[in-house]
Image (cartoon, rainbow, N blue to C red; front, side, top):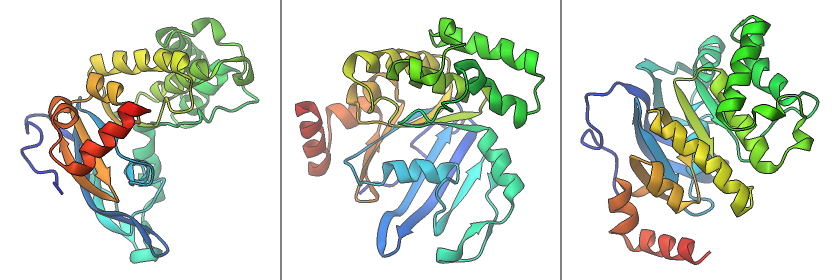
Length: 267
């Protein structure tokens, strides 16, 4: 098992997300067993591992959709404030949680678009209601973002009228509309067939090329190889191996990672 240390990244870039000693349990089942993760400005980190390895849980801990029983989380140097211990642990300041989440946009596997709203309405809802943007300005930005992800002509359509790939690109536009400091992707392509998957991968690659800070849980080793600066392989709630994608994916050191990559290439 390897743990992330100060040499994993150049220390010249400011830290955006820092997670130290994260433990997460569901009853007696410990899913995360003491994991450290650092994402600096502009980093693209891919979390890989088998189903049940803890990668999605770790991602959800980053923006407090899941509450770890132990561990420290910092966003741009500000520590999450806690109250209670162990199973009773909760964030102590709800306003802090909201503030963090507005800057940590999440893109989910199942899109999570509001079915009763048009695509443009989906994109502008949070900027208007949470950030207080004026609707005309939000609509202008929203349309520009839909153009950016290649579905500008679908702004007045509803989610049910779009393909899965188009819906996921709308979800990415919605995340971008919050002007986030970092973006979190939870298996963004796993619900899509291969053709539609490529539409979304192209958008993610473009975002990586822009220098956006991203943490991506993915089953797609080609995506990890193409966009990541750093790959973390989780196994049973621990970091088994990590490093640059060329090293981790092309020259794995652990038997577990070699087995995982072999199984992935056979899928």
